Image (tube, rainbow, N blue to C red; front, side, top):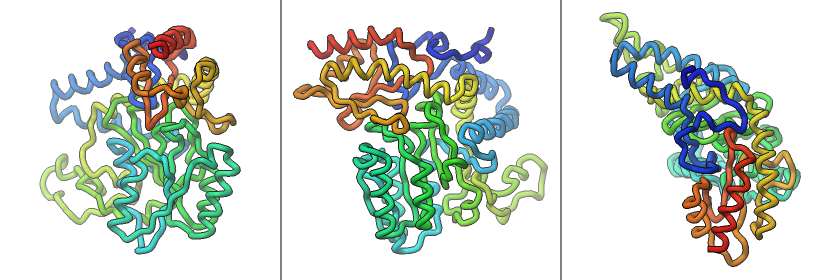
Amino acid sequence: MTETSRRARLADRSLFSTLAYDAYLNHAGISPPSSAVVAAVREVVDDYAARGFAAWPTHNERRAKLRQRIASLIGASSDDVGFTTNTTSGVVQVAMSLPWKPGDRVLLFRGEFPSNVTPWLQAAKTFGLEVRWLDLDAFARSHEEGLALYERALAEGPARLVAVSAVQFQTGLRMPLRAMAEVAHKFEAELFVDAVQACGAVPVDVREGRVDYLACGSHKWLMGTEGAGFLYVDPARVSSLVPRLAGWLSHEEPVRFLLEGAGHLRYDRPIRPRADFIEGGNVPTTAFAALDASLGLIEELGVEAIYAHVQRYLDALEPALVERGFRSARSAFAEGRSGSLCLLPPEGRALEPLHRALVRERIGCAMPDGHLRFSPHWPNHTDELPTVIAALDRALRA
């Protein structure tokens, strides 16, 4: 049986035989590639090493199939998905392609990861926009309270666009995207979603959620490698975008002059009126092969099953940490939960030494902005938990 044909099973890390951790709980940071992903990358490299340019059509065709796979993951059509190299590049594309007018407002949230803030701030400087900020605290207390504050902010000063993460990186809070989209549309605003902390471990449906734009990278919960990502654009929004960052591959029939002889080199071919106009140049073939392989495993398991599996793991881990004085930021209500368990350290305990001690104990975790974050995925098994807790006890004693 080859690595690419081995099946994925929940709570089974046999596809991660070289992983140097007793428990890897940092999939919200970077996921280690499975042996299936490694094999897919090696296959691409070997093919290009053997055939050079002749390998390009094969892998270009595979990316077309990957586009459909991504669309199915988020409930979209393949025509509505464009490839990027990471989440940030998708945010930048929309930030620089919207038909802004001076004075347009952008609504942002304090506490967001910078990838979903910096491009909007740069757009504000470039196009003369007004930035308005909201806190996330009300959403953490309840979706209802957060939505009331959010609607009041839009009623007081309508925005052109609202940018939010599907899941907050610092606390693991899952945001009510459908309700946020409905409120945004009520006030003629559009909703942009950074989904890198959701896709692959939390169900996402852009049509059901009425999302206008969604960007994601592949190296976290999608379990690919760095260098691949995608952008979804609602087909009703594509025609209004201004392709300011278009490149040579953004045109209709962009490679015809390379494949069909003389007379086809033209600079006036129209820019494609689809989301994939953002694909202005060549993308890293190995990274997209990795994403295709990792998505194949996620498809086998199903995102709903993965989400339930991760919740069972966190349900077992959280009480043990709270007993030891950690203060959990995990949502008290199920609809606010994601794949991450984020906690503040016990009173009087510094976070950095605890984190370093856990990593020395071969427990993979992260410490985003003052929180200790554990983010398991489908390979993690609750049998790991005694090892995690014992390592944590030793770190606390140290």
